Length: 299
Image (cartoon, rainbow, N blue to C red):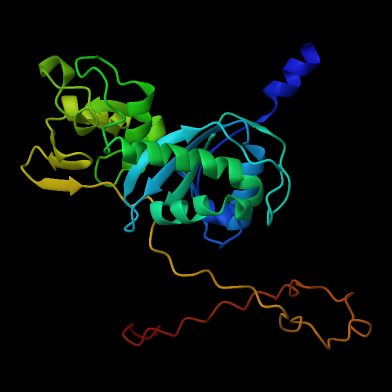
């Protein structure tokens, strides 16, 4: 048991990976994103998905402009553990999050022909079923809970984290997952625990709001209006889940010649020193000071 516990404790800790479902299906090569770090190539994203099969898998269904329509989680996983186009193989990770992004139009198209999705058919079927159930219910608020509750439930917290992506203070890049879920209107002052009154704030900016004389308003869900102690106004809004990126360039089938093609390595003398220190030079003699013409003659 001790060896098993040591092996489990030595497992890599997962990351929060955001990636388009179309990239995992092999339809394109759009980059993924590791929250708080930055973009990664499609191959690296596929490799991280392999290692994080045991992580929490979320999804974000968007409209044509990339804005969030529906967020949730799925327990389904692809049948195979080796998606096509992975950059390599990593040992399984503990923890972490995999966030799948898919436009509603593409989800409807893929759900119409699940056999074309191969090993991802089960995941697509689950997402399509949740999306259909949500639309048939008249787009009711899935995150609804008791507004008088002190803390947000898991569904509301997940929705706000996916919607706002990061701390909502202007310029802050702390991930929403690592931030506090703040009541825009304080709960002690009658603020409701709803999506329209919640937003992620990192611990530093959370204290800044309460102790730094900054004021915060949320006119509409996800849109925040900060007022500084000097009266300046700063507005933030949720970024699009899926950005409008150019089409990735395809790799050439026949790459150009190697940069050293035609170089004669057999006659190349690699015994010569790459950098040789020059021999020390003698110090130049001290310059002779010219006589001062203003001095009187010595006689």
